[in-house]
Every structure is written in C-alpha cells, then in structure tokens.
Length: 202
Image 1: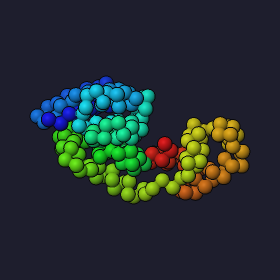
Image 2: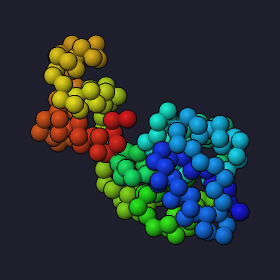
Image 3: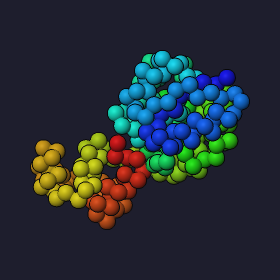
Image 4: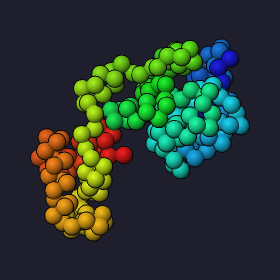
C-alpha cells in the first residue's frame, strides 16, 4: 500500500483528490494539510511514501516545503500538483527535490499512475509542461531584476519602486530597462507579467 500525504489549501480540491485516490486499491491517503508549514510536522508523524504538494500554500509555499521535507524525511518522495502552469516552477520544484510535477486538471487515473511511477523511482513530469519549460529556457533575470519587476507588478512609479527597494531611481530604471530587453517586452508592466507567468519572479 502506498501511503500519501496531500497538501492543498482548498478544501474541496483536497477532498476530491483524497476521495479519488482512495478508490485505488493500492493507494491510501494517510494525512491531509491545508498549510505549507504543516507539511513537515505531519509527514514526520504520518510517515507517507508520497507527498502531493500544491505550490501556492499559506504559511510556506510547496516548493520550500519540498526542500525541507527532503532534509527531514528523505524517504518521502515529493510530487508537485498544481494549477499553475508556470515553467519556472518546474525547475525550482526539481531543484527542491520533487520527483514529479503534474497539473491538477490531469485525469485521476493518470495521477494514480504517476504516483506509482514515482514510487518505483521514476521522475514524472507532465509532457506538455516539460516541452514548454524547454522552450522557455532558464530564467534570464538576475535576482535584483526579478525583485524590481516584482515590485513594479502593481503599477508603482519609478520613485515608489526606488523607495521600496532602497535604490536610486536611476538604478531602478537600469534594472527595468535590462529586464524589458531580456524579455522582449514593450514596457515594465508587460515585462513583469511575462516573468510572473513563467514563474520567474519567485
């Protein structure tokens, strides 16, 4: 029997996942949490074989929780199950120790098969998503460019961004200009949206 922990903050989605997986004769959901900072303590208590983690969780995101789980309970294999098809998340997930990356809208039988494959030592990634990740390549932005774009997402002025990041306005303009060029955007708002959609701002 494969023991599973589910981390998902939406109760309806979490319940549906648990119910569907419990229909499989060789799968057993032994723990459910709705916060990222509850994952490691619950995993240590329940000792799951597989942890299905959402990325966007309160308390701690699933990617950070995956990295902590790898240290605290290395025998537990992590799979990211998300609605966010951001290619930057895939690379971060794999570097955090995840063995699988699947989207929530995948059919339940496919998820069960993916769990079994991960349990058998394979790495499983949604094929369409893997293709997109290869197409997008690596994140071209420096940490400071990511930070500057992230702060500009809500339409703040250059002066407001500079004040928030404790930088000069000229430095902010330079970071934004380089980021806009790298992303092939028309302006800083478009550049920020492109980077956010690819999961490159986190």
